Image 1 (cartoon, helix red, strand yellow):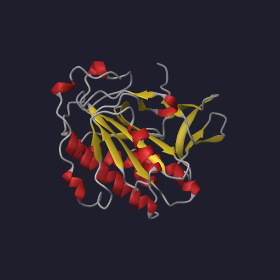
Image 2 (tube, rainbow, N blue to C red):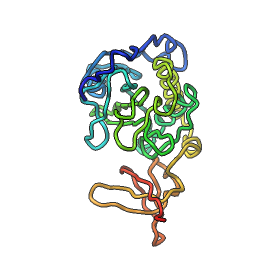
Image 3 (tube, rainbow, N blue to C red):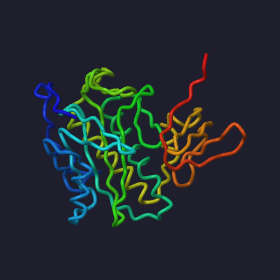
Length: 263
């Protein structure tokens, strides 16, 4: 996305000194860059160079931010929080499907603490308010087993800067200090991640914030789509869909839309 003409009116990211204490510490302090094509690419490069778990790059602007399925994430300068995190989870392969959900849980908790917004989690990787996307999460596994998680949070976007179906904290009437917001979010992500690594089951906490479970949905699987009711999460965090014929389908990766009944 081109540089936002209103960026000069938006304050730069402030101090992140609060992250020098637990639960973020002992992970390294985040690195803040003014602009980059993609924080995902930046952290992937640092991972290849041997960067430790907990390495974070935060960008004031991304010019080629990544979304799911090759989409571009719109990253207006100083309007949001765009960051990527390096994780090296030592868990069994069958548990890895939970990772983006666990990060989403941490993001939701941090946003709630900083703003009081009634956030929900749309499976598998969106944080929503009133059904509109406030934040997105993307997890990509590297060759050595490390995982880079990218997060974009819409903070100060104006309505004309938002894609269809999106929202921002400004639009919702909340204008948090971005540094304070990031501090809360990263601290909660670290806490949720470490609990999960230690064997805590995130299912109950995730379901309490779910905007998907119990809804009639359509899941786009790429080569086909299926419809049914989202009834739960499987052992690996997959979505369980009950179809009209009584069969159940486990969905591990898909774009999911709520199907609203016609009136």
